Each structure stands twice: as structure tokens, then as C-alpha cells.
Length: 185
Ligand code: HEM
Ligand code: HEM
Image 1 (tube, helix red, strand yellow):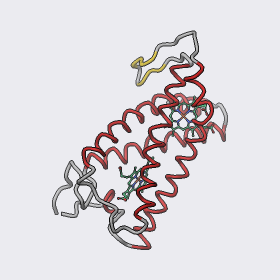
Image 2: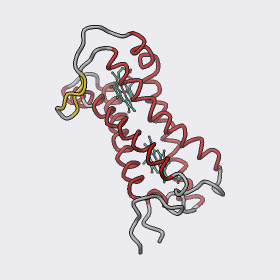
Image 3: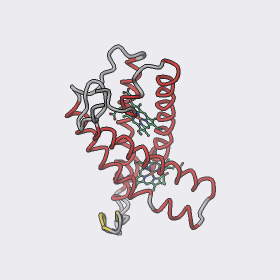
């Protein structure tokens, strides 16, 4: 059996796309888990550690989605196409919505963080310094929709996983294997 290629092919997503997909899925799961624990258990020593990682992990997710968009563009003519898939239009629209939310949610949160003059460090490396003055227009968008869009993304991902399960166990076509299976070569 041939090894998986680094780049995408029309038959399957390559190693880089898969690495980005599964690393980001894990970090997103952590974001939802930590926010859900905060809502359910309130402020405890454990939830404080989880919530304390929310902004740095979210910032890493923003960097990763920028890389992912670049990789998508570089591979767009060679990756698996939806032509001929069941509900191809829905799949394309769903993936586009996932990309949009993955970008907007951390972007507006980071803008608020900066506008509020809060400090930020990632693994001990300072990224933003604290400032006393606040910039209201930078704070407003995330105050209005960041948390709400964060939960909307979770709902869209639940639909995405439901579609993958349909492909795998009901329609039994090769769509799930394009991101999860071995090399088709
Ligand atoms: C990239 C992925 C991210 C996801 C999926 C996400 C998701 C969420 C969710 C679901 C909530 C809970 C809302 C509630 O209480 O019901 C939340 C709150 C919050 N997030 Fe994020 N977040 C992300 C990135 C970030 C980043 C990069 C920052 C800061 C730089 C940030 C700062 C905050 C803050 C301060 C809150 C509490 C206030 C609020 O609800 O707006 N988040 N986030
Ligand atoms: C257990 C969780 C997940 C499973 C089983 C899963 C599975 C898959 C599969 C099989 C594909 C290929 C579908 C196709 O070729 O049409 C795919 C693509 C995709 N998935 Fe997921 N996924 C999961 C979580 C996530 C999460 C959390 C996100 C984003 C927040 C996400 C975003 C995407 C996107 C944007 C694509 C299109 C390919 C790309 O550009 O990377 N997935 N996923």
C-alpha cells in the first residue's frame, strides 16, 4: 500500500491537511470543553486552569486557520472534489461556513483582547503587553457575538460529524476515508 502524500490528491487529503484538521479539531474540543466546564462548575482551581488556557489556545487556532486557508488555496485544484457527491452543494456550503467561523471567532476575540489592553502570553512567551486605555470599537464585536458564534460553531461541527457518519455507515461511500483512511494508492 502506498504511503499518504504530503499534499492532497483527488483521491484523499494529504498529511498536511490531515495534520491541520485533527490538531485543530482537538484544540477546538478543548475550547468547548473548558467553556462548558466554566458554565457548569463555575470557578474552581481546575476550571481556572482550563479557562486560563482559552485565549492562548484560541490564538494558536487563529494562526493555524491562516496556515490552513493558505494550504487550502495551494491545493484547491488537486484535493478531493465534491462533484458527484450526495448533497455536494450542502457539503461545500458547510465547509465554507466552518472556515468562516474558524477565522472570525478567534479574530474578533483577539481584537477585543488587544482593545481591552489585556496582556497575553503563549507558553510563557509574551505576545501582548497590558495597556491602561481601552479602544471601544475593538471590544464591541466580540462582546456582541464571540460566545454565541463559539457555540454555533459547535452546532455546525455536530452536523459535520453527523454527515461523516452518514457517509461511513449508511451510504458506505469513500468520503470519510478521504480524511481518516489509509492511502488509496
Ligand atoms: C478559536 C477558537 C475559540 C472558540 C471556539 C471560542 C469559544 C468560546 C465560547 C464557546 C465561549 C463561551 C461563551 C459563554 O460563556 O457561553 C467563549 C468565551 C470567551 N472567549 Fe473564546 N473562543 C475561541 C477563541 C478565543 C480567543 C482567541 C480569545 C481571546 C484572545 C477568547 C476569549 C474569550 C473570552 C474573554 C470569553 C468570555 C467572554 C465571552 O463570552 O465573550 N476566545 N469562547
Ligand atoms: C470527530 C470530529 C470530526 C470528524 C470525524 C471529521 C471528519 C471529517 C472528514 C471525514 C472530512 C472529509 C469530508 C469530505 O471530503 O467531504 C472532513 C473535512 C473537513 N472538516 Fe472535519 N471532522 C471532525 C471535526 C472537525 C472540526 C472540529 C472542524 C472545524 C472546526 C472540521 C472541519 C472540517 C473542514 C473545514 C473540512 C474540509 C476539508 C478541509 O479543508 O480541511 N472538522 N472532516
